[in-house]
Image (tube, rainbow, N blue to C red; front, side, top):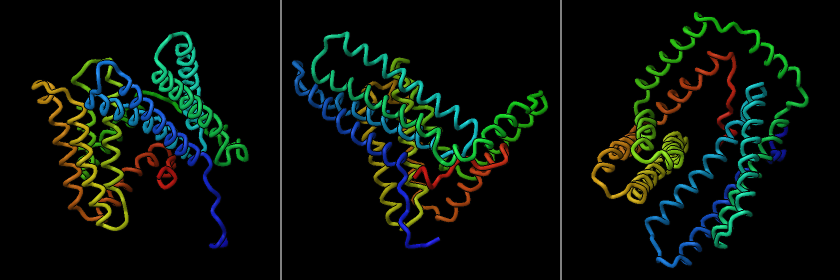
Length: 303
């Protein structure tokens, strides 16, 4: 292979990134415009909270698509991408009908239309991604994969062995990398203390914060850059807490552990060697290979 040859750009990756960035900009400007036109005045805390929720949701959907798109050809990849595409397009269609049927302010219409178009775009990219990464050139692998899954005997012994293997790996992973799992525990606690109507928004937000810490923690490069990224993550965690959590003693007491766990995870990560990070990541990635006989996720492509 000629090292000077230009690398073919990943159209699926860049189209997802561009669409997510455009959506984030449009939805943010529309939300700010709606707040400025509000007769009751500007509520900066509510505005920041809504922006955090919307941007976290946009990131989450784009990241789900990237993870599924970077899986190697398999029947699970096909079903996952088709399901994501169908759900995104179906939700957007319903939202489009609802937008035209209701008479709402212009700024809100822009927000709804941006949401609809973003959902359509993600859904279309998900369906088109089914045919990427050589799946058309090697359809036999998909059929073999489907045959292998359908021929598996899901008896009690097999399921029990899988569960034991997963639980054993989980406990080993917690013992090997408590910094990572403290951030995950914070994300589990975060969406549990408020109304179920906003549970999805807080769940996505918790996952986004955890991923911010994990991305900074697993950065392999200049140590100063990694420490700076973790410091920015800490600032974001406290800013998010101040903007999201209502000033009520019970909620602050309930969600306080998430703040402590996220902060402790990011700060502790600043003091561990990079070699320990690589070993922990490789050990956790090995579970998929042991269960399925191959590695389905190309982490470099996700990044």
